[in-house]
Length: 230
Ligand SMILES: C[S@@+](CC[C@H](N)C(=O)[O-])C[C@H]1O[C@@H](n2cnc3c(N)ncnc32)[C@H](O)[C@@H]1O
Image (cartoon, rainbow, N blue to C red):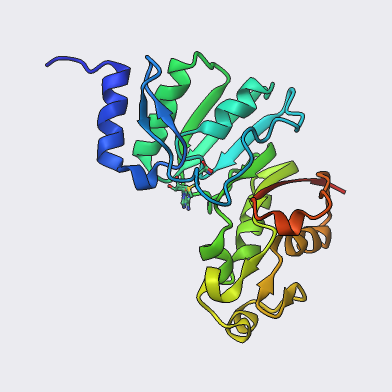
């Protein structure tokens, strides 16, 4: 039987998975765009995260890595080893192919549920576009932060929206949301996830290392928050 080239295998995988599950752009070895990335929409992350974080010599894990975009970035930014974890084996295979195409040799991937942290922690754990409207609206924000802590010894990098509206983003009244997630960062129908994360992680011995720019709560864009052990 004819062996598929990596580009052919990638194209087949993209068709099988479907564009809605592929969060970032996928290119084949010739630079052809196979999927645009469903996550590149409104409220998206800024263009080049996490370029301002020092990864040199650190072990880094990206939880829910999808096609491995941020794993390759961490590897390019000097991580001693960057590892991507995703529960979907087809996405992990896409990530492996794109990493091989890019000639990145300090990155690897594993099919794993991030609810099962390893015995040995990584220096840095990252989680992008996981703690979003659905998770926060279900009252699961702290649960996901706790999961991240199980993977990281020193640093956490999380993407979060600065502000959500209970009706528009959670399909709940403020009271319904307050009933499942008691918080002092709910004002009317506005909930402030960045304030919540800074407070919650602060109480667990983490310090925010990123700067919060003036007016960040009105910009609408997701932000990257970088925490270190206090
Ligand atoms: C919204 S996408 C975010 C992708 C990626 N972090 C990014 O920003 O490009 C969520 C990803 O998390 C993965 N995922 C969901 N639940 C998971 C779990 N329990 N363990 C590992 N991966 C999971 C999904 O397969 C999917 O690839």
